[in-house]
Image (tube, rainbow, N blue to C red; front, side, top):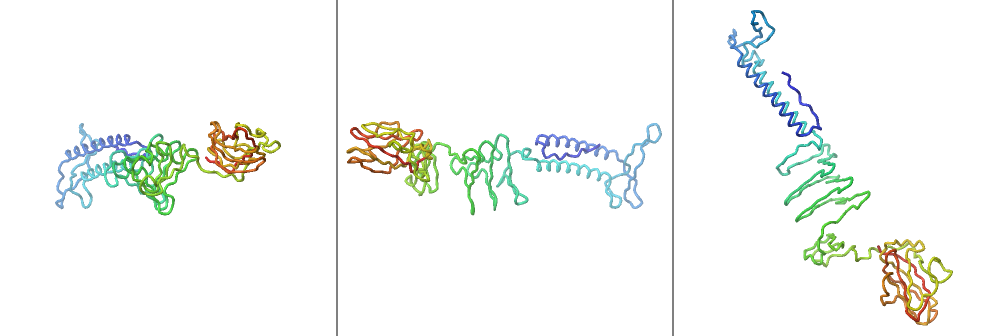
Amino acid sequence: MTVPSPDHDPAATTDDLLARLAAQDAVIEALAARLATLESSVPPAAPSPSGGRSGHMGTDPHPDGGTGAQLVAVGVDEATDGDRPGRRELLRRAVGTTAGALAAGAALALVDADPAAAVTGTFTGDPAVTGTASPSTGTGVFGTAADGYGVYGQTTTGTGVFGAGSTGYGMYATSGSSFGLKAASGSSYGIATYSGTWAAMLAYSNKYSQVIFGGNPASPFTAGLVRYAGEMLFDTNQDLWMCVTTGGPAGFRKLAGPGTAGSLHLLPAPVRVYDSRAGNAPNNVTKGKLANATSRTIDCTNNASGVPAAATAALVNVTVVNTSAAGFLALYKAGIPYPGTSTINWDHTNQVSANTTVVALAGAAQAAAYVPANSSTDFLVDVIGYYQ
């Protein structure tokens, strides 16, 4: 009987390997049965002159009295002739060797299989699974998935996945279209990173955000929790906070949110976006004095100022010239009624005065200018910077 050798196929699935093991187990059982049959048919051997037992190969008498070609073992026992093992012992060893080879081959196929064909199951221990790279510059554990988790770790109170590296990455995660690394925790850190000499975490993306904050935590001023310096929080109001001192909520500073203006961006040089005087640039604006309780729209993106249409506010310098006897001019956000304030005042005719202010902007980065009744003036607006 020919014993099939196990195919060493790293890409074989676990089910395939188990099926092959079952077939090879049947071969082992057949060999064991054949051995038992041979042992039962072996007659005792004649004593050798030395008192031991010897064996020889003979021919089995053919039923018709002739001599057949069927070879049988005659006079073979467990005793050996010199240092040579007997035939029974050889058969037993052959069966044992075959079984060991089959099992070893199957185990080797499982160990060397690609990640998609690795062993599945439940493992116990501390740690349950350990991956050590050889050479030391290689990868300890590598997981890949077309539409799932490459590596998934879950724990009740400990660490789901832990990675450590001496000079390389302790943990490296990448994705073509989803999250490179996603972690969740009910009562502790979702992700904890540490580095002795370099950045503890590097977030990289060629298209979308490097980091996305999720969840709906309450505002740090209403949550009633102890806070720690270094915390960042994106709360249910869509405000982003940074904690600078450990303790209560007083240690938080708002970094961004729907109600904030954003950061101040100074232009390389001030840009004049409006001048009411005829013949003075920019010329694509409404010319003439502003007078008698009227308002005028100021476009802060004009004259290629560099102010984006999405700017929330502008830092401007406003100048009045050719003024009436007395009055004031107010700058405010376009699209709302005059709020009853003033930005610059004058008290005599032909006065020249300037003032710097921050003005909120409506959509398309627009502000409004207003003078009261019985007042008039030419005015200029220079943009120094913007908020976004």
